[in-house]
Length: 429
Image (cartoon, rainbow, N blue to C red; front, side, top):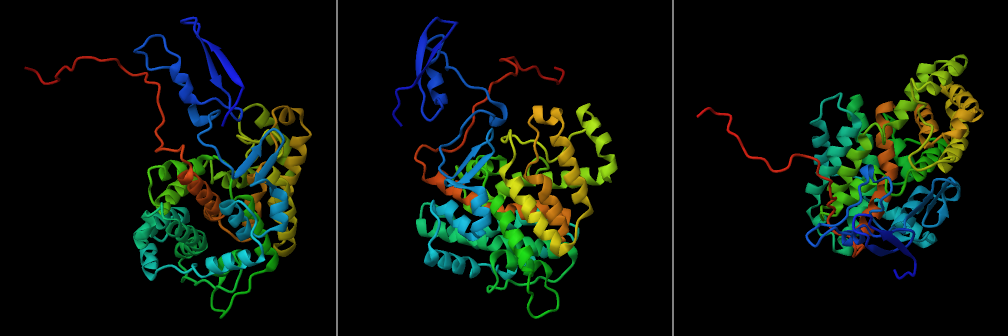
């Protein structure tokens, strides 16, 4: 935390100069408070709508270099983790900082697989939703409701209690997600099968009907595991920030995770897959792509699934997803939208307009096509996103709790309303 690097600032209002320490490429916003025009001046604030250039924390979990297209979990490149590690091992990595050895991995899988069942009253809670309730709405509400089933979750300073809730949330997410889907479809709930893998068990609860045991396709199971890994964490995005902000009040992890899921529910975050599918359906055929591209360049419409708030190069997750797509379509058959997507990508990346604007395919571009090919309805896409993101949310939440610099989140504002004014009664005297 010590540095010899300084930013020298001269205030043109007063002529005074200040030296602000630079640490890890950042200055502390609180250091701006010393820049005043008078002794009773509050001091200078930084104004940054949507936090486009403000760091709210110091984190050792996920590293992103958007200009170079780099994403790493705890130092490991995302492509290596997605191709060589299981999702649960990646979850351990995010939470613990290191990859588990064989014994730790087996013990971790055992813990998760033996906490997949939910209290029977949770089923009654879900049954209270209307038959056409959105699965994500059911999931968000049910996650929040879990806090009433585990009152010990409020003891967030107790390491053992905190670990119990982390295990429960990761373990029960696929169960809650599958129950939400089956309720919306009017199907009976299928219970977990602890002998299946994490992704395989989720497919079991989604698909099992009258057969005594459901055997998920290994290719689809692997694809789902990879997709969960690719979505496991992504630095300080909207939902992760919501998890940290709510957690900063020392709320239990179920309440914080419900808030994060709510943020993910938004169409600009977890709903982006659906927008890509709608775009591809609107295009309709490969022949219509050039005309669609022209409309995009004229500013009439947006090219969904291209560009990213962080990545100004290829999204490293998108390349991995294309490999998974090939494997999935060998099992499910080729999705007609894939041909449109591939040709759209080819034409866009050969066009100077998109290259100069650094608009490259992101993780959303192919994810929705894969999920649709696997038989998931569009309404389930943000739910699937939430399953994969839960370990990252929890790792970020715990890191925030253990960070002594963190306090309850309370942003400042730049007030632009009325000054003091007298009250005038609207009632005639």
